[in-house]
Image (cartoon, rainbow, N blue to C red; front, side):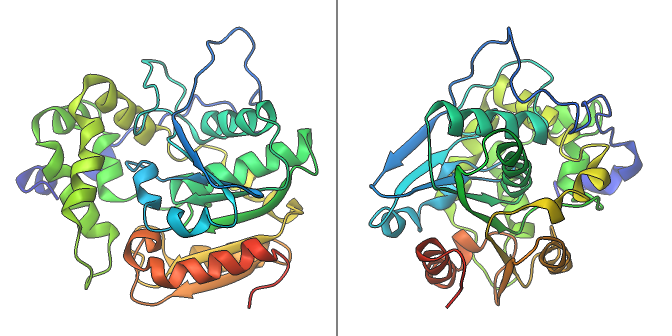
Length: 305
């Protein structure tokens, strides 16, 4: 990826941020901190469905699903802190736990009830943690949880994440390599081998990397992508008491389907659905296969037809 830069990189140079408080110690509400208004787009009516995108994406990742989902539900798509059109402050709080806190606070502050949280990739990890936070602080608010190719356990991080997390080189790449080239190369890894990377998505996702704030957010998020206590956190997954649908692209090269199988074993009464001919982003690659599975779960979280 990125030509000779990748050939020169020593993957061991990546520096992950170890200073993030443990999930048990993370304050769900940070007193005295500036309030962050995450960018969102809401449409439709009915029981709320909260959509959380993955690393380097934005609400644009849901473009094929929203027109159908909004016919039966209130659909709320959120840009995570540091991505899309949401604020990108120059602070050090871009961890999964910080993002989960913001999602937790959004649900509570907007008095969402019977909400189903749908998370993809990084957004899946955030949805997992936010669900644990909600179960502790506001039980009964959440109707369902959908995890799509979600991060969940300690693993070898993808090369593009390790590049961004590498001191000097990460900021250099984001500042020198044209954003469209960065996104194009990453999406080739994200998509299945027989999938075509859409030019419109490349253009939209590259937008954030064209500003210093967006580049800072990408680098900082990469360094905080894998919390140091992730293995301990994973021991809490069996405590989830919310109906859970787990969806995976069979050809996922970023987070392998074995992670989905492990999640299925860990989360009680969860359902696992594997989509053939899809890589890491089924919502973009195979929306026509993902949509009916998602709609069935939203109609009745307890069963999957």
